[in-house]
Structures are given as C-alpha cells and as structure tokens.
Amino acid sequence: MIRASLLLLPVLFAACDGEPPAHLRVAGGDPARGRAVALEYGCGACHVIPGVRGAVSWAGPPLTEWARRGYLAGHLPNSPENLIAWLRDPQAIAPGSAMPNLGLSEAEARDTAAYLFTLGAGRVPQVPAGLPLGPKEAGPREEPRIRPRA
Ligand code: HEC
Image 1 (spheres, rainbow, N blue to C red):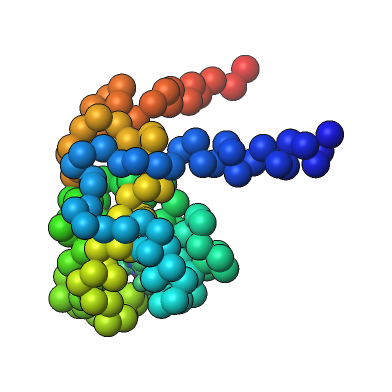
Image 2 (image 1 turned 90 degrees about the vertical axis):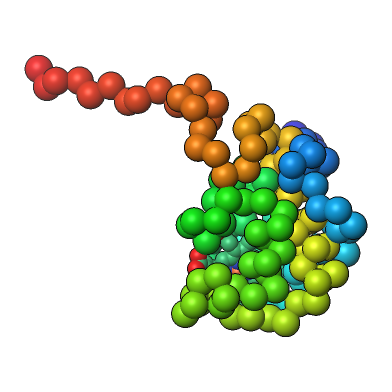
C-alpha cells in the first residue's frame, strides 16, 4: 500500500511541471539539455532543483516551481531574457553575490532557463512575469484569525 502511493509521487510532481505559458517560453531552449547542464555545472552544490540529481543544497535559494517566481535576484522581473543574463553573468547583475560566474555559453544558459521555466509551469498565475499578484491571484490563503484569550 505504502509502496503503491510512493509510485504515485513522481506523477503528482510531474503534474505541476510542463509547458510554460508563452511569456515564459525560451526561444530555442531545450529543457532536456538544460537539465543536463545544471547537473554538469554543479548548480546543485548551492540549489535545490527538482529533477536534477543531487541538487539538494540550501546554500542558495531553492529553484523549486521556478516558473511561479515573480522576481529574480530580488529585483529583476523573472523573464526568460533576465534569467539567461543572470545565468551567464550573475556578478554583473548582483556584484559580490555568492553565485559565481560559471562560464555558461549563451546556448547553455538558454537551455538551463528553458528547463527552470518548466518547474511549476502548470501552476503559473495568468499575470505577466514581474507584476505583483492581486489579492486573490496567489491562491487561497486566508489571514490567520487571532483569537483573544479567554
Ligand atoms: C556557489 C553557489 C552557487 C552555485 C554553484 C550556483 N548558484 Fe545560483 N545562486 C546562488 C546564490 C547564493 C544565489 C542568490 C544570489 C542573489 O540573489 O544575489 C543564486 C541565485 C540563483 C538564481 C536566482 C534565484 C532567485 O531566487 O532569485 C538562479 C535562477 C540560479 N541561482 C541558478 C543557478 C544555476 C542554474 C546554477 C548552475 C549553472 C547555479 N545557480 C549555480 C549560489 C549558487
């Protein structure tokens, strides 16, 4: 029984990934190759990246459900162009950041961006990258009620 439900886990996770909406699609990027690039360059030494073997480090921010992220490095709208620029030269965008320049080629950065934008793509709210979400767009999340003590 337990084993049967474990078998379902990848299916459940896969349901959140897939084809990103138009504004997050990376022209000419190959997600399968991007995943291989992330493994090869050791991104997992600093990041949690679903689907990349051994990418379980919390030294940097987790890249789970990346397609849902509004901002990149805290200030750039999370668009394909900005992500590619970041992957090629993070130090130009955030000088002194703990993320080093890893020397990705333009093609490698494109492929990696294409892979990251598949993560959580099935759950992207329908607002353009970088715009703040409206009150009801982030899903149900009621303010917790604070009950006065009796
Ligand atoms: C030595 C550790 C390290 C390595 C290796 C590394 N990163 Fe990072 N990465 C970081 C840190 C730290 C940040 C946060 C930087 C900031 O916001 O200034 C970051 C930020 C990012 C961001 C933006 C995250 C956000 O929440 O804004 C992405 C995307 C990213 N890294 C992808 C990658 C990819 C892909 C690779 C491999 C090609 C990689 N990183 C390799 C440390 C690393």
